Length: 468
Figure 1 (cartoon, rainbow, N blue to C red):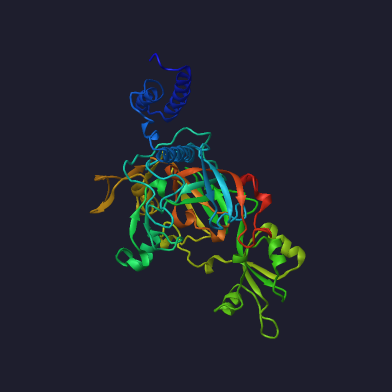
Figure 2: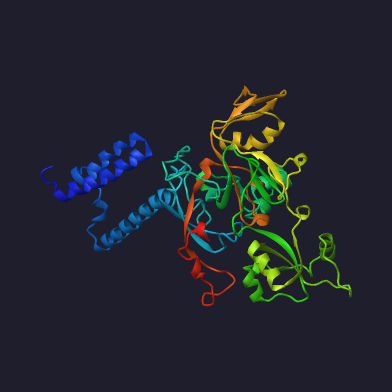
């Protein structure tokens, strides 16, 4: 102890204070044993922690210095990514025009409190699979249960939230990214999904924190009754005011000419969304079905199928660009399978519910409808067994007539209402799946333009997502 310098004591004190703050934040006081290691690292040095960095060979010494720097950087990134910030890129158009494809977000995990990882031994910045080599980026042991540290607040209605995909617990590795395992089961049957390796590949399970990240807007809170009537959301019977840039799909009949790139840019419609229907099979039957009429010579004007905000609709009307505009009717919506997948409910994309959103501590009666609505919450999210035996509902091997929820749940929807796979498609988001809140757009790229001609959306950079 006589050889201990003042610098060593200062470093030990600083690191110990930070470590104590983390232990108090985490609430796991067994971690206090780690102070013994910190004390030895900075003061007593019984363990030769840095011996590997001082080989006699100068080449090996240089390599060791580089390895030490890389390890330090990876550990720092790991903890920042785990407890503070995570970077995320918007991959789909489900939140347009509030967030655009190509927006790069900084997600604040402190907003709702960071989670202790289910799989702590993982490579930083890789969600579940190393690119190119296609191997898992995490080790499943040790595996920890759900615990969330204290954050700056809680999820609020209309928050844009990043969360782990609730239907992503089981994955068929060869399936298209927008087709989840459970959809494949309903469409093809379990035997086909598990045996057809060419189409579906291997079937794997992913822990909560290794499931795909999604970003949607929270429209339904725990304990709410939610209903959608003609595209309007009602919460507990009261109309929810939609976001300013919410958009729907429309059939737009022009006055005879095809639109040019400038017009689409004024409407903020991307190239991938500019669908001219006239050359598609079934065009005539489809447009007649929604009320578009032929010209006297038997032809049809160009008809576009495009997503539009209310602002874009007003611009079309003001400029006189359209002969007629028709919102996409619910009855021609393709792929309209809606959670909880009960045909008798006749719920649809535009007319959905009413549905009660589970709240922690609330109790429901168990009946046929409630089992359809909430069995996935009971089994998959809250880790119970549920069986029906001789007409009795059995939970964890015991007869049950009611169930009390352990978690809060949320109902998430995209602002691109007609082109969003959200809670209408796969159900509720449990609290343990919530990752964080986007707080900054730090980069935004436009895939329709090159780098030197508007490829970077400068006006979006360093903007707050909620203010777009």
